[in-house]
Length: 274
Figure 1 (cartoon, helix red, strand yellow):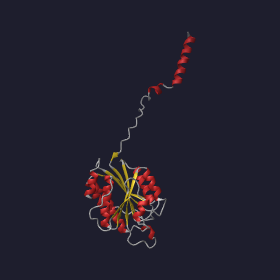
Figure 2: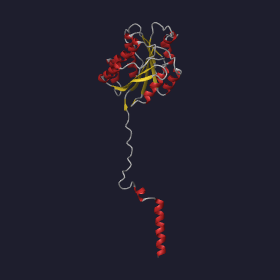
Figure 3: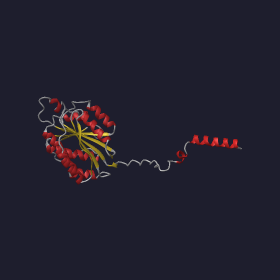
Figure 4: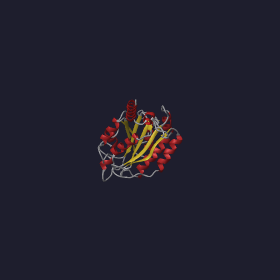
């Protein structure tokens, strides 16, 4: 009997050894906290549109052109027609990110993603825009501006079915990779790229082809910069025409339709749809 009991004891000990400590089967040991199940990631707030306003601040953009962009966008986002277009969306809100770009590696987020849904939120955005300092002044890498805008869209804390990059500038791409490569890659990822060109009355003495290329800067933008369904270029020569163009452009982008020129547009304002 003693031999039998010894054999039984040995078998039990072997089974316990193979199974490991009892606590490992029953759960955490006494006094040890249970592992928490990670909480599901909250869904991103949805808006009708993710819109990156990408403004040129290269060397050829003088103070007048710089203020034309800053003041023009600030006034346009406060325009009652733009606000009405925002409110008419399925959700009634859009998210805007304002960036400035120049040469390769010279891009900056001036105002990060901000939801615009009413006059108060538009006013806060506009006030912050006109008060922010200019980022820098270097060469002109439209490609770098588009690439940077795409990184901002990828990092947006909001979700939207439509993604648009709004490029404003006064010259051709003269720094970094080919702008058509950046455009094509952005469009392939689902973004639309529109443009507003700021005309230069007197060509630069040191680089006339930059601001006044053959065929016009608007033609250059149509052929090389804009892309995606319904992409368009608008042209402004002064503050008055720029303001009208920016309002029409924002309404078109927010509503997802072709831009409609205002009645009796001021001299110098032209529209070109690709």
